[in-house]
Image (cartoon, rainbow, N blue to C red; front, side, top):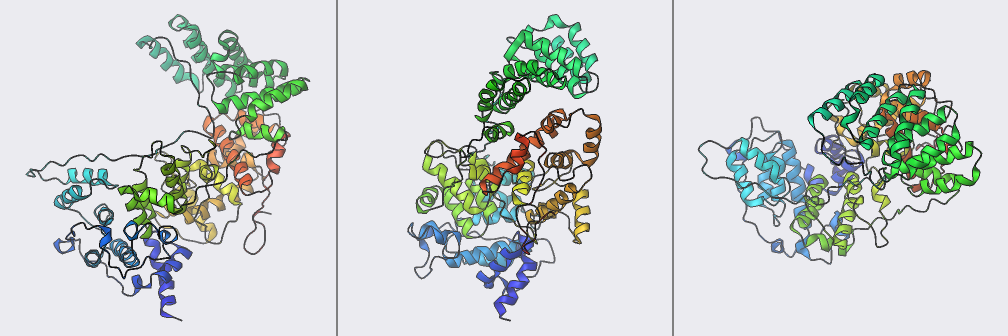
Length: 638
């Protein structure tokens, strides 16, 4: 076996510790065998004076020797050749930086320092030292941190270095460090899943202490004792204006509805709507749902139509109310009114009810824009004109997409359309779907269309063994759970990673798969997806789910136990949409609708059938039917 291949195989074991896994590790080692020619030993003690680096004086990148040629295998080699040698790293520095980052991850700082002194382009030395100083293997001194701030205060990570320096600043230090002022670029998110945002009613005057006490009393009783909440409100009715009072009463009506007290819910909601009309869309919505449950479809249509035209409702709420108005008119034998309300719902195709309405109308799903800008020479040149952009491009050459993203996030393109698209193209090329999704929420093309390919990105981390569940479904959950952020963590629940798995759930699934997972591995995207899709597969076969997509979403969010309980206690009349709207937990209701919407849009992206969408538009229960085949040709779920 050739030596390079042996080294590459060894890299598969070594490289996961630096964030490079699986096939990427093998390919990386074959391209840069020099990195593995010698084994750098871990230091026996904490870093001492000899581990510190003597920083070279900054030199322009054009100082690179003429004999150094661009590396065609790096990202930059595909797009930067005509920009000039100073816009990117040469092949020698690509190898040096890659080895530097590798050595620092191993804790061999002396060897890393030796490589730093050999660099011909030092534009990302600040990023190198940032990685070192903020890592757990190196204890940076105040002098080192202060020196970093003097040299690299404009680099990404300056705020973290500054905070660390303050913690380690000795009392006798005379110098005061200036707080860095970094740009924060496009931070997102506008919720383009919903379209327009809600504009809630604002009281004419601010609430006083007595009003706040009443609202507090309502809040305390609202969940389990709606009657007590209503009495507290009625007792102090004079404290509130008519619309304020009706908005509070609508919240009580909502509580009645989800406590299965439909008559009380209808009475409170209808009273609020009859006086305040479209100013309180929640009241009209609950009145409509309550009337539907009572079989009064004409009355339900009346209240849903009020909610659907409310200026206080979000696009998500408008599309929901409009779709239910159409359903109600159909049940009330007024088919001539159905199309109008379906079209109103379909005006918001990224919402749950909007995409269902499009299907119900038989319209072509052609509103999505699956094009994403390519990182061509012009876009790369636009980035290279900015210091943060030049560092980002160099970091990509050095195979550090995470650090590159930190630099790119500093850039605020303002109204520079070319720079906006350059940032989006960079995020897509870098394989950073969370950043791509964020940028996609604020950038449009020349026709004012959103880049749906960015809003619904692919996960570039295939799990070991491939996908056993359709990618469209896996990505639908990832998009809702973490917005493709591998480091996402829920402090209250302990859920972690792309699919927000609880450690106990992950451990159980790992045992079923016969694998071991270590501490922190839930933040490894490929591992998280592997365990997450195994959990989805198990839930699909649960007795309470039985392949139902809607119930799968409920079980994933709230647990199979709650799903089984709600199936027994909730009066949903075997209506899939009423089932969703009767779930007593708002988070779970929204979760189901968001994941299902994501799922259908991903299937449209992959040119797959949307039979489940057609079923729900017809009032039937959508079930999971696998489309993606496993490598051996068998379908994922039978």
